[in-house]
Image (cartoon, rainbow, N blue to C red; front, side, top):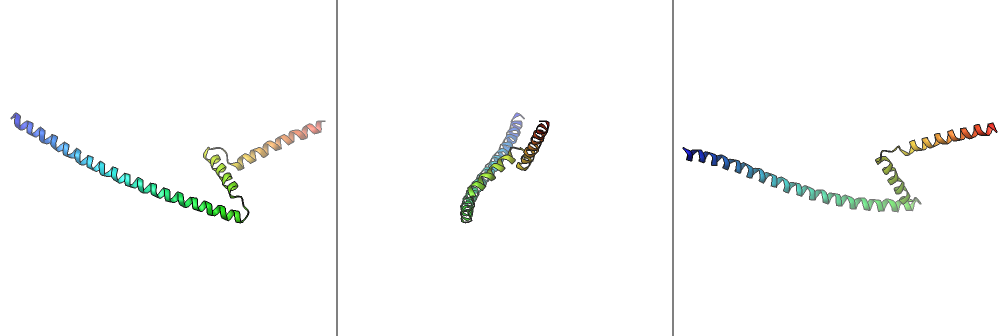
Length: 116
């Protein structure tokens, strides 16, 4: 009787070990597939980066032919991107706020001049 119970326990243990082994194999295959996808993505990013570099050089050459400072435009675009990324007000809003301040200051100056 004890031997039959032990055999059942061993069979159950063996079944669970086999199921875990299959899960480990599936997980291993998923990891291999993921590594392949990461390699493909890396190659794609490298290819796109190379194409972007070529396009930038081409656009700068075209800008130079038309007497446009391409580097200055790129620098301004980078500044605009940073302003948008940090959540600050867009440049148009900042300009409007500065104009409003200047109007208030000039109004104060006009009042001072009239008092004199």
